[in-house]
Image (cartoon, rainbow over all chains, first blue to last red):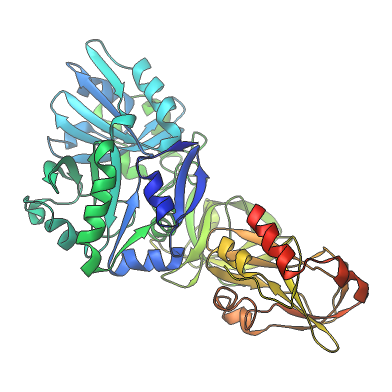
Length: 357
Length: 127
């Protein structure tokens, strides 16, 4: 299994480890519910070094990426970040990622761990001349500091004015004497930062942050809490809620597709999809019966199967079962009663307006 | 991680306590630790009968679903109703308030096939 530079730190802390797409990652340290609540109320620190980084640079870097991604790089100036899908010709989602504008001709793509090779090959294949893509995933450690106290914690370790760093912007800065990218982003829906730096500095950075956070309730958090936190905010998880067989419109990501920006891969089909959108939609629901929905469970309205659960979990904030399912559009209205098939019986659930929290 | 003396254990991580007329069954400290925060419990009906190693219930943690397997054959005479609203009792007190069911055993000799505390401690050491 692949290991992040913080692998030993997690083990020393007694984390429960799991295989996550070929990476040995911490699921939880003291318990998912406790870690989840720390992020909502105070602050949590996550190792997300398994994420991939691909640098696209050269004369035609911007032009190339405009062809590859669905969102519009013209929204992006130096120091800004956008979220975007990359689609196939048929509109299916190859990956969802962040694009950082480092220079006019240099962009850093932060991609899902399980898709690094696939994305890298796809991007290389579609680059225009005088442009290169480099897979720099091994050159970066990445941690996420997330929660209402994150700014107070980070402020202690850096000279930059974090008040002037707004959402989806980044800055190159020194934190605890280490050079890094400080990015006002995250996957939890809370105030937070993602930090990118050299792997050699990872253990030192982890310790510095934990130390600076000790008066602010900072808690080490694993992938378990990361998943419940993102689900409460309905952030799509690649491989669960979106993949090559789903398109951005049915996934609720229509806002990331800029059909008017000029040609890009998938555009022709996506125009079509948008016009007829959608036969099915990714729909949030709350469990009203006794039980829990999980990925892959079937959803019914009466005898008719109307979809499948893509994400399902217990919500530590709401203290009830929640989930997302692709449902036939006529069943997606808020308040619709649906049933989830759980181990050969059906439990009641209700379509709700997202996000859950 | 604690293993309690004077209980019988199964390799599926259930424990059995012998009372005068019945058996009490629960999951071990090791099992609750592996599962993490338990948020939902499905238990059988009173009077349901099970053969040894049948699945008699389900424990769901935040992340995972796990069946519970009955270590001895018998008829359910009581289920722990407190768990329906407070499933975390299994995490907090797996050998006490977190018990799952009480069973009228069909065959007392089945207890002899289970592990002793010492044997179970060795077993989880190897897991």
